[in-house]
Length: 474
Image 1 (cartoon, helix red, strand yellow):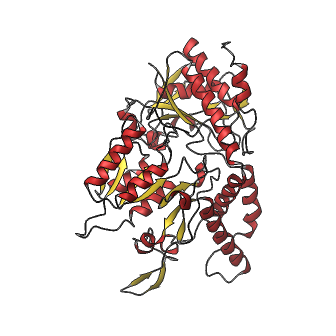
Image 2 (cartoon, helix red, strand yellow):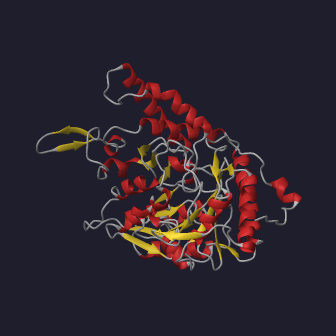
Image 3 (cartoon, one colour):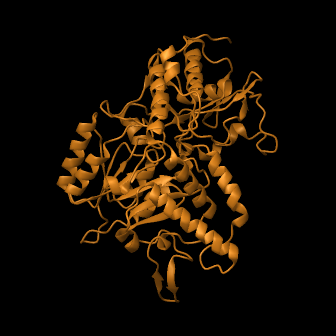
């Protein structure tokens, strides 16, 4: 099928970056299409897992020969690895503007960080769990940990920033809350609430504030000290360091006294048959052998992002997002999802639907016929998608420092072709997931994946929506 679409205006091309802001691993990777061609992969799924920065991969290669056990090891490489790990901790804390008395805990990801913090919220005087207030816009990582002990109040957000802030203010005045836990930027729409207002509202009510920084920290400069936020959590795999480390950074007192996140070696001062004396944070929450390489990778990513001109970072992402939204709005039958009409400075995350078409089918088409990676489903934000009327899911495209304007144009052209002419291949649902019928595409040599593509997700389809298995959404 040959498809022609209106070319973007010269002004659009001029405003859209031709090059990535930082080199990322895999930017030249070719993927096969159903028509037999191979094209460079257009990774527009950065919000789920960002590719590694090349400088991060280089740093990992550099330190791997130095890897050994950490903390208490007398060997030379053990001492080197310990120094690398603790240096990485300082770098990560500095990246988010940690105060002198804050503590940086190396975790697995944002979900791990917020589960850890949930075990540290002080109980009420009657022994009941401390109350936590969250919005219905949250990613499940910032919802489920608080719901588990029954201490969470989930407030339905308003249709505007002002209405949502007013709702938070009223609820915080109604009951004594220990913590307001809120997203720094929506993983569905990229929109956010003003941090300064959130901090003021929480602190005026005597509550602390924790920020889910998974989508904010990689895309905008952030500082605990400058904002007054009490805790921030974020993930390495969304910060261009996909080596299994994340971080929780914030005020020490709760973290020193809270329930140890894991019970095990390294988290204790002394153990006897009848008593355990725990360390203070961060060791208190880092039992077992830590992810030294992941921490070093995250620190390298933090250094690389910190070295960027912040105005250049915002300009790069804003140009890509603006072109993406404008292009989607121009295609008949495509609707861009928005939460707050008055939100400003959204990050590079855009969710949309193709009216009358299963989002999983559209995502499968974009991959099989155009080599474009997007996300479909409910993005681990089920309450929000339900409130907005997308119980069947939607499609998300997201950009970052490694994204180019050409990749955005490829998506817009492919969607226009789909709306105009439909798919050229035949698709079917296998184990709840849309796939190409009799898919002719080969798998990478040596990957061990031959014959597994159609059923790889079968074991994870406990909450499937459309094509995408929801538990894999992030």
